[in-house]
Image 1 (cartoon, one colour):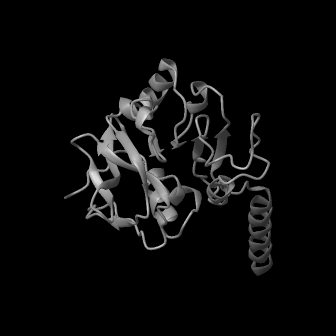
Image 2 (tube, rainbow, N blue to C red):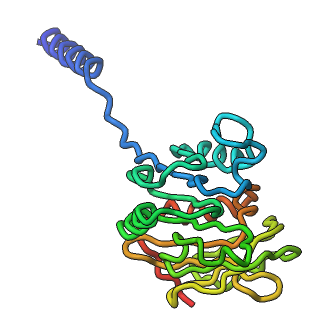
Amino acid sequence: MRASIRLAILIIAASCAFTDLNAKPAARRSLPTIRVVIDASHDGGAWWFPQGPPPFDPKKPHQGVALADYLKRRGWQVTEVPREAKITNQLKGAAIVVRIGQWGEYEPSEVAAYREFVRRGGRLLLAEGYVRDEEGDSDTVAGEFGVRFEGMISGQGFRAANAGAFKLDFIEVSYQIGSVVVKSPKSTQPLAYLNDGRLAMGVFPYGRGRVVFISSVFPILSVPQPFAKQLFDELARPGVRRTRS
């Protein structure tokens, strides 16, 4: 009787071991990859320098590579749009778009692509450099969202605003040269001022997405820490955050 019991136990144990060997491991749930599009199609030189004239190659040395590599190290998919390319289909499937500077003019179809991207839930980082007097109205992408940059400003630094839930550390951020924000939507939450008190950075909701604007490209290009981490952590978060004043 005892021998029969022992035999039964061995058979059950062997069956369990066989089942374990053939069992498929539980599938790991992987997070979706964030796709970032860097629109340097109208860059005036900050992103692609020292490359030029066209064509521009993301694989060759350029000032923007520090930011592109930083985002790739986060595990994100990064697409750099070269000068003279048209921004239409490139925005499809992106979660974040970084618009670097503005030179020349966008076509109406490109402006419409930007509008629909943010309206449907995309997050736009609108970075501008200095603006010559005759170019104040040429940034039709910024104008579509109610933002206007003006002037050629240097010798300034950033002063953080009381931004509620959206706080950034500007200790390592260098302004160098840029513009000032003279117009933005009423829903704008200021993020930073220049030392002289003029608005330099803010965020506002638009449709299901949101727009962050900054009046110098250099804080983006130099990828200072922890500024870059805080900024892109916020941009990676879907939905609209209503900040408290």
